[in-house]
Length: 164
Image 1 (cartoon, rainbow, N blue to C red):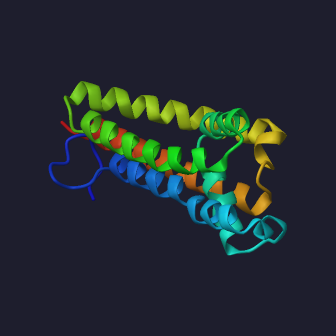
Image 2 (tube, helix red, strand yellow):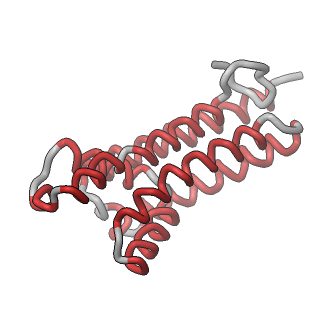
Image 3 (cartoon, rainbow, N blue to C red):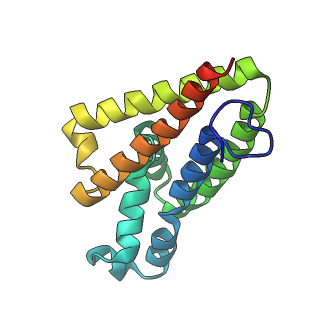
């Protein structure tokens, strides 16, 4: 891994951001699949429910609110179950294309990512309903993941700025 915009075949901070985002998007899926087969899991707290909570707590708030609206609109959790991996795959494909494109585009994408994650972190700090949506342990994990993600992208921008 190397920080910067043009890293050749090595992974950049924004590239790691993309992989972390994709992994976090897939965390709720085992719980959702298990619950669709056995509704008794909803009443119990366990490792699968923590994966669900931590996964959704680490996603951007606009995405969780959108998925929640989609669930309320359709009434089926399986719609959300299939949307999440499709979104993760599409995000990975688009980000790979943008991050490996022209230098100017790659820098702009990184700045937009920093701004989006920064606003998301501020919302988590300022609005109590965003903090405790999935409980404190998941909120702490989600905040830490988002903070690390923005740190990776900022490290790319700093490394690019230092290049001659």
